[in-house]
Image 1 (cartoon, rainbow, N blue to C red):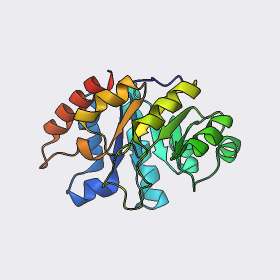
Image 2 (image 1 turned 90 degrees about the horizontal axis):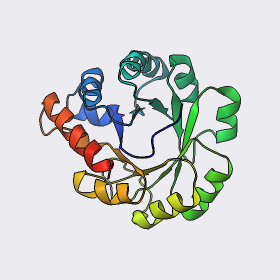
Image 3 (image 1 turned 135 degrees about the vertical axis):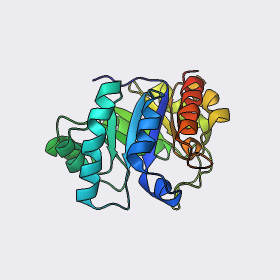
Amino acid sequence: MTLPSRGLYAIVDVGSLAARGLEPLAFTDALLDACPAVLQLRAKGLGARDTLELLRALVPRCRRRGVPLFANDRAELAALSGADGVHVGQSDLPLPLVRAIAPRLLVGVSTHSAAQLDDALAERPDYVAVGPVFATSTKADAEPQVGVELVRRAREVSDVPVVAIGGLDEGRAGEVARAGALVAVIGALLPTGGDLDEVTRRARRLHHAAMG
């Protein structure tokens, strides 16, 4: 599978959904109605069994839409569920080990500086993520913001897709798209209330803006 280089990289963050009383599968269905470029499940607060169950429910949904599905952090759960890939951070399993235990998976790697970017690219990930581009409230332990400049640098030195993340919304998506990156979004996809139709509308606008 080859990942797209533009578009909305939609993140289903279970913790953010729970805080708003939103059910993950219903929220994901609303997102998939907009056909984002990629979808990731981020379930930091769930145990392994619940995360695996949720991933297994998401796999056929994403397949029907032709949307690649990534799990956050949990390579073993991504492999067991049949997901397409896993996204790992700087403190997660290193990419060579992920490839050793789950060679079928696509692997994306988070980076927060030029040095981390160069190190990640040397290991040949399937995509590299850069951020936080802008200040974000979604992660309590977020790294210092890196700006669009590091996104541009990543695009210049990389021959794999680049994902920009952190503080991105509809207004900023175009700038990131023009820098040549996918636009990863969590907060800007969340509805002001429980209106799932609003989720679909937001995702469509964001995907359009992220296509540049």
